[in-house]
Image 1 (cartoon, rainbow, N blue to C red):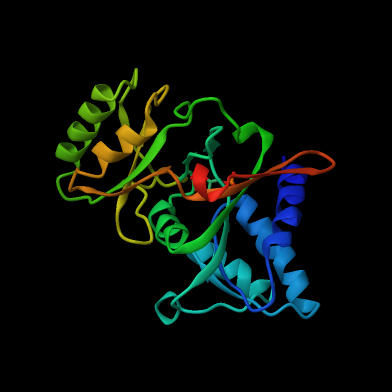
Image 2: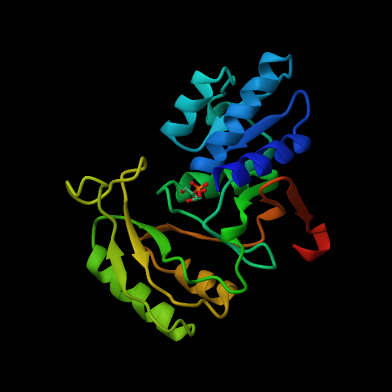
Length: 236
Ligand code: 5RP
């Protein structure tokens, strides 16, 4: 897997040019990319990164990638990030690493989003991976009920939400933005646009892990190469 992610990360460097401001995603694929980027920076490439999590910021620091404060930029040329699922239209499920709110803010503000994954993330339909939804802790039970109804009404066979815990089971995971994550078992999301549209109207939701019409490039790492797939602007 990591060999495949490494090949995807290497291919993503082709989308990076001198002088660019880069959105740096979170997760293992994104960290591999940041390490490779650090090697290019050491070789003279001039870029600056906007990290989507403290872990990515740390990784960038350790690998010599200069960072810029998100509130001091007016443009992000390319964001490079991983994903939990990718469908044939480049719709994504993200949030496995609990960074989806910041990842979506940065991806949405970018001219281009390049997604780097291994082959296991490519699916015909989104939904086998539980959909992460970042919610405000206040009124979370009410929010979970509304989410359940939306998922059912938009054709998802399941809809049960599980509150994500810290890895050491010490309590609910709190995101860097101070919210909780509900992992919603959908089974299958037949109409991601409709589900996203309905979720967008629930006030307790800070953001959901459906990333639609954001990725224009998906790079699938294989054992010995990477497949680069691109959607045109009209297809987005
Ligand atoms: C973090 C994410 C990650 O991009 C996603 O979970 C994929 O992670 P990895 O590259 O480790 O497989 O959305 O919130």
